[in-house]
Image 1 (tube, rainbow, N blue to C red):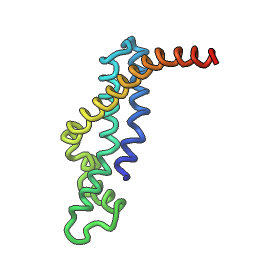
Image 2 (image 1 turned 90 degrees about the vertical axis):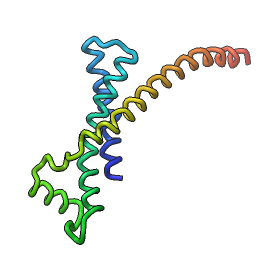
Image 3 (image 1 turned 30 degrees about the horizontal axis):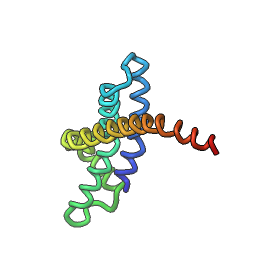
Image 4 (image 1 turned 180 degrees about the vertical axis):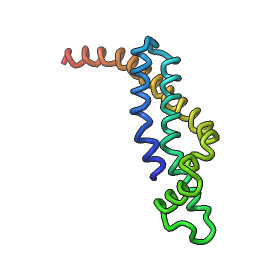
Length: 133
């Protein structure tokens, strides 16, 4: 729940922020914009999601009672191994989550585009029918 909350809380805001910035820099609406924006979002998601993943993995795999809880595990990990220890295994995680984020957000954009086109054709017909009544 914690990891999903961390990841989900930044996925869409980061995507739309990156998309808006890229459009301001001259990137036109289309697949290239969606790919770049979703790649940025996937990277940020991984940055936020990976530390809780690392800590939870250490808690699950501990032998005995090495850690008393999440904060104890986080503190001991940083104290003994440094801040970058919570990012061990980041690249494999990124390799898994980046394609997922790119596909999800790019397909969502294409679905929205298709739905707007369908609505543009159907809604005017429905309005004509309701005006006849």
